Every structure is written in structure tokens, then in C-alpha cells.
Image (cartoon, rainbow, N blue to C red; front, top):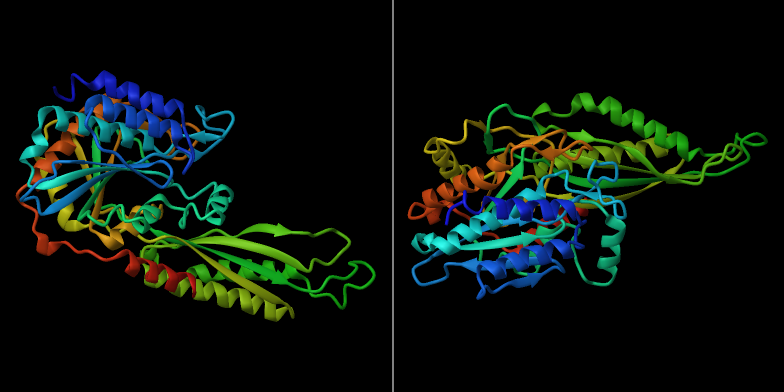
Length: 421
């Protein structure tokens, strides 16, 4: 059994998941597809379920295996109702490539199990299928929060809280690269931004706009002043931090004959480091308070944490780079490109060292209406074969002194400290 002979089967799995996109914490069809495949391959498989749709299964437990390496795949789709293959009822679409992650993980699992090659690894290999990586459909997740079914919007932080990663020492993910390539390509050491949300509710005094605008305090004008301040402040933000700010109006009850007495403006804030995120968040707060004060109003500030920045572990990436140099099927490698996209792999990387290996094989814009795969042979045969090379490179060579481990409690304290600023 090898990746070539199972290619059609894995392609069918990928197409099945692509045809049935589901949003986070709702991936019930996807969960059943994965679980059925695992049980077909290994009738004795033990599957630990978590977070409604999450699954965890282990290969190669035993004496002398000091480390536990997790291969992580994400189950969810994006809300993109205008995508060419979106679900007409839910608006979900697989235009982020997560369906390929799941199929790649299953391709790797089947070859490893049927060849027993995992038995030669000096580490335990655990496959973890995580729900809800995409930060969306928040009204539904708010209901789950109210029902105490989850604590976090993101699937990996939720799994961290539940102890799913307590026995894991290293995390490996893969992800579609958001570009088109003429040649088959992988990417390593691509750092991701972290982000949080800020909401500012400006409060003024309403009066009749024609009869008595003189005694009013215009909340809309306060928000306009705030937007101006944010725009002028961009010159003072560090280029190296790749800061992204996008203020939008989230709510108001304005009418043309009444001076508005409230308006809520929200923005995300993305940076490459937690420290700078906190600094810029304070600047935004100052701009909001100053804008309200200038026009004799008030502002209520609310902060909601998103995901932590992701700094890929350079030590672990060396194994991926070495495997690339020994591979004769993949033409190019990208290295050390930071971007302002984010993912909850950043949160997991606070607890344990992680890498996310990017792969080409797509056309269109990632998260766009035209996104689709165009090189399934690479995605579901060649790339999984390369990942096996990465694992083989790691076996017998991992230096435990170069790894780190933090507790969920330390993570929770950090998130609270950021959100409370």
C-alpha cells in the first residue's frame, strides 16, 4: 500500500467533504466521514471525541516513546454564500482549503497504519481533527457559550481547555497557500498575525436636528472624529508589525431629523506580536476617548480577544526543509514570509512548539468566490508522501531540550491580561 494506490479513495474523501461544507462546531457530516474512514482502515481504532465535532486518535503508543507529535487538521468551512460551490442553505464553502487538510491527514494515517511504518518512529503520532478554526458565525457560538457548551470561539483554544493537547509535545499543521504557483511549492516559517476586536459605543445627547441642534452632542460626529484619528495614526505604526485596522459601523438608531445619541464602531486589530497589539489597542482607546471628549460625549470600550500571533518553530521547520531537499517531486520552497492572516494555531503554539507547512495546488483567491484546487495529484498523493518524509526526518533526531511546554492555565492568564486592557 502506498500513496499512489490509495489516491482515488482519498480524492473521493476530499470531494465528499468539499461537497458538504459546514461551519465551525457544526461539522457533523464531516465528522462522520472522517470517523467512518478511520474505522474502515482500522477496525480497532479508538476515537476520543471533544468539542461537539472534534476527534483525536493515536498511532504508536508504547514504551520508549518519550514524545507525542500531533498531526492536526481543521474540519470547518468559511461563510461564503457567493462562492461557486457554497451550500445554498447555510452559505458555507470550503474556500480556505481545510477539506484538503483532512484528506491529507487521512492519506497519511492510512499509509502509516497499513504499512506499520509508524512503529519505527521513536515518538507517538496522534491525529487531531479540530473544529471551528475560522473566527465566524459568532451569534451561533455565543449561544453555545451561553449554554456552557464551549468557552472559546476557536476550536484549538477550546480543545486546549479540555485537555486534548495536554499529552502533546509538538504540533504539525498544513495549510493552503493563498497564491497561485506554476510549480509545486511548499512554504515554511510563515508567521501569522494575532488579532483582537475592539468595540466603541459613542454616546451623546439627542435633540431635534432642525429645531434644536445646538444643545445636542452628536455621537455620529464623535465616531467620524475617531475614524479620522485612526487614519492619521497609521503613519506612526511600525511596518514590521504589519498592523491591520478596519473600523466599521456595527449599530446605531440614526434618523435624519434627530441628532444621533449613540453609535457603535467596531474594528479588528492585527499585529505580529502580543506586546505591540496591546500598545496599539491602548492608542485606539485613547483616540476613542479623545474623540468623545472633544465633542462632549462619552464612549464605552469593549475588548474581545481573537487569536494569538503564530511564530513558527524554526527548529522544527529544519526537519521540513531537510525533507524538501531530499524530495524530488516538489520543485520550490518559500521560507520566512510573514502575513497578516491569523489562525488559532497561534494559541496552540503558546503551549507547545508548532509548525504549519503550506502547500500550493489551488487557483483563485483564498476565501474568495473562485477558490478551488487544480492539482489533486499533488495535494492527495505527492504532498502526503512528503509529509511522511518529514516525520521520518524527525524520528530519532528530536532534541527535547529545544522544545517547550506551557500549561493551559498560563495561556488563560495571558488571554485575560490582553482582553482586560
